[in-house]
Length: 518
Image 1: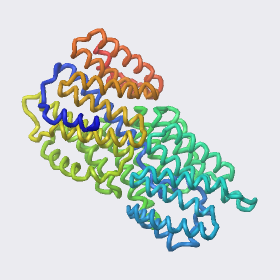
Image 2: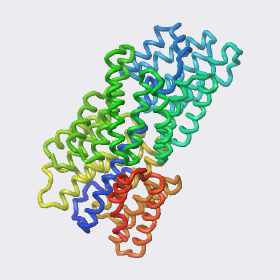
Image 3: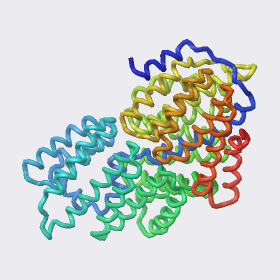
Image 4: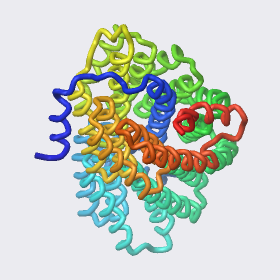
């Protein structure tokens, strides 16, 4: 019997118990809001790795890609299937195209189509197949003997494949590797003077920087990209660049600037959808993701009703089930906070029926974690308030969701997501007052976060460890854990805190509960 299954069994029969301190619960509520928003922001930063959006971000001039129409019945069929969300069928058709190009001895086209196949397997959560396809693609390019006449085409294909590899790495939690890969892609684009490809690579690098917690550096890069984008014609590249800048501004606490930037991305996407029929398969997804980003910014501003509306719109326009579920999960968390229980029950049933449809990915892991956090909040309200929610979710259900997230994070090798899953499972044990198990899971989460220098997660588990030690009477150990949490917060202040005073105030307000524990 696996450890995950034992965890679930242990929690099945555990009743909800009262919090040991309502004051501590009040302190935690504010910071968990920060943690949830951070997770939401992280998901949005890495959540759009589809092939056609990938190409629009960093494909560049597309000259060689257009030449693939020499076999239109296969390549174009695959593209249409992909855009329709039929990823398995797309992979099958593209594999036929790759085989045909291999028979023709056209290694460049074969390598590029293999990168398309990798994107399709990514969407299905078939990571071994995706990684195998992209590795084979790069290996073929290295073996190809290029002449001076085909050098530019070969370099362009290399840049496009590196771009896809970066998306695969980011989706699997390999943030530093993704950053390095996109830097290589930028170098390749620069070598052939492809300005659009350079800009797309820089946008992708900013996404990687954000997932690494380097928000100020990401913002600086995106501000430079924005200026260069103004010189480019309207395109999905602009849509993506503006959205990423808006997300970075939100994480830096500059909410007004984020709110000004994101609508520009949305308006542009909607305008392009009306005039560019060739992009009909891609733009709805761009619109949905931007609505999701707007919802997160509205939420950070305290505009609850506006955020709920935007999440509903994002879910309604989502093309892929993964984005739809994420929008629904975000909406559910706000409905729980505002105690709209009738809608919560309907939405929970809708989400629960679709959870298994999400292919394993970092985005799927965080969606499950965010969902579990909302369900745990309902449990806390039931324990700490005279009037309980009219619906109740068993601890075993929450544990199963977190156990699935934990296993998927392990399979992906995503250390950040794994730490988050372990820590939140520890939080569930804390809620049921199983102190020893809660401490064990929290310590595992902390070790992972410290080993990989994930400071913005480490302080959360240090704070949680302090509470657990305090609950077990280990006051000295609790103070030591709280002190470490505060020290990490001081480090975070230097990189995460926004540039303006409003953001600094917001940061102090959200982390103040940690200081009050000392």
